[in-house]
Image (cartoon, rainbow, N blue to C red; front, top):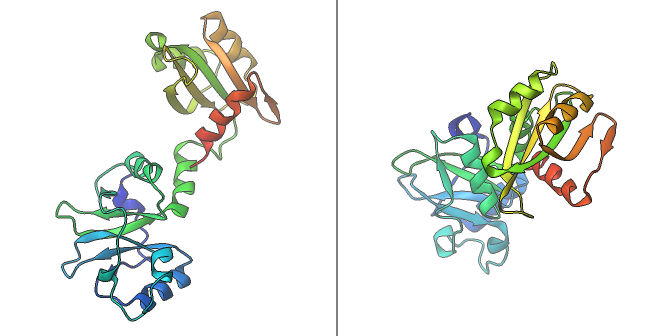
Length: 222
């Protein structure tokens, strides 16, 4: 899924000559605290925040009198959903601007629209169990792990890999499978020396390490 496909065309951009009051009216109507600003050629200039505009002494002033934010925080229309997520994670954004190769603004992606896409990509709505597996970095092979999971009649719906914050030599792999009962999968993985950090089966969360709960939340949250 590309950034162009995620654009919310109901959210307008503002010309830099727009008046403060008009910008505030748009923000109130849309229930959003930032909007994109463009010049007369619709080239992206940055985001203007409600917080800054509320401090204006004259609501008839033009937006070009106020500092803009996130001038360098944008994605190009051909970039992937993951690139959009990365921009959101870098700063305090209500939305991310989508540009063409000439930096012309094509639209914006609001943060509130990301959760349904995130849930779809990571199969959050699908029934199944979740495993968090720890292994040495050089032992990681998703192909091998997939074979072991599929040997138990299950399928991997989604996966997420990150470095283990407690041990730089290891990685943590979070798997969502289409099976609620993970016991046979766990037994197989442990037989091949994979360490199961936590498991979450339907209606039966099993906490193996309290400090790993945050990893599951990180996997599911935006």
